[in-house]
Image (cartoon, rainbow, N blue to C red):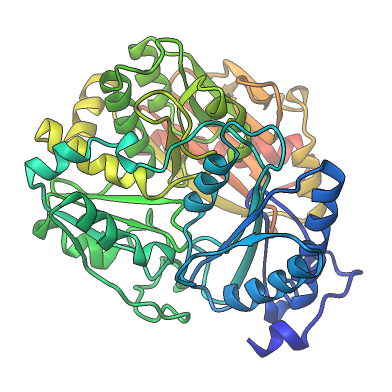
Length: 481
């Protein structure tokens, strides 16, 4: 904490500069990548941006339970107040989930042409306790309502008396779940109300780090151990923009599996949605989604990593559901209008309860049925070391740089460096065959290249794809392995 105030960045060191990625600026005060200097500069830049863009409505600001979030909140408030901006904060001075800020902006801006609101969320998401993060939400606008039942069939959940377990993972949603359960009369139990900036109550992740990642079987070990107490259980990360579903039948669902289940259910049960609404997915999400979308006869929009690519479609109602492999998703209200334009970890969790209540089968059982129809894919992500030069070259790679004609014994059918859904650069490469694919993209914060792979065959085929993917990428970058 002391380093937040006493430390400061060296502009000549790239890792210490402000760097807005797909989730805003993140860093650690001990590394001089998240200090008061950063927050004062970012906050002032936002004030100047508001003035330049003519944004003069209130600014909604919230923060999560990480140790660096509250001091960053105070630093930002000083700058915002000094610039005469009307700031809206939680009425109880409590923590605020990311989707709450997004929804508040949309609700305020509904029907307005001027005096639009925007927002700031101070969170490093599910990252370890030492990290801090800072995100800006511009005034995307769009109609919205404050009633949760516009999303979910709460009456069906209540009447079914489905047993629901919730773990906020010590995050910003800790004050929300009890209120939701009480308001709608749900059979809901919050299994852990602990808030501790060290997050020492967490089970460690695969590498011994503490991450509040609801998609990790390691971080979710306690919740998985309680699965037999509930019909369905779930968790959100610290800013509640990611979901994690624990089914009674199967334990923790892979994020890609739940995305497929949610899509299959929603497009069969949201009768007020337009028949033309599309499904949105990121370039590294499972091809199971493609097969479900084709079966539903729904248009699929595949975009680069980053939720910003879905905003316009959510606002105009042309995208009914959008999701990414890292447990981020949102979808339209039951009447086909927008709810949030950011990832939401609250409502996708409640959807799991609706699915269980209305079908008498939990999401794990639903996925088994999908796998029986469309195949059961194997999916994995690995990280490979990469220098700054290699990362830059990978980001700018052209399809012609890939000279291979086969991948793991199958003919290559596509080599992509632009997303098929919007033709935007994916910042890397995706290679596709009939039964599998891999994608490679550089990390924005680490000296690694992320390689994602999937097959509808077996584990041996997946391992072959991963092995050959590394060789294809190295050859394309002219790097000797």
